[in-house]
Image 1 (tube, one colour):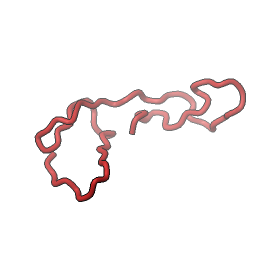
Image 2 (cartoon, rainbow, N blue to C red; image 1 turned 30 degrees about the horizontal axis):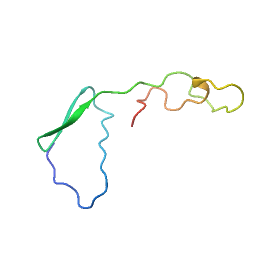
Image 3 (tube, one colour; image 1 turned 60 degrees about the horizontal axis):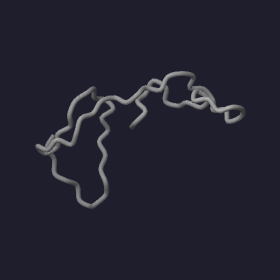
Image 4 (cartoon, rainbow, N blue to C red; image 1 turned 45 degrees about the horizontal axis):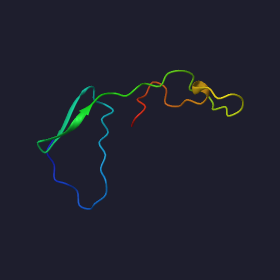
Length: 68
């Protein structure tokens, strides 16, 4: 993609959630490779904070990439 940089000094982010594996090029410069991160799976039900900790105890966004 080619575009003019926005004014200001705030950081920018690209949401590559709709893309698969590949490389990102902006204005002719490679900014790196990307691929979907691990997908959270399991019970995305209500969070329960009592009892022994288990990784599946409080999950959200099941079926979605972990990094967005």
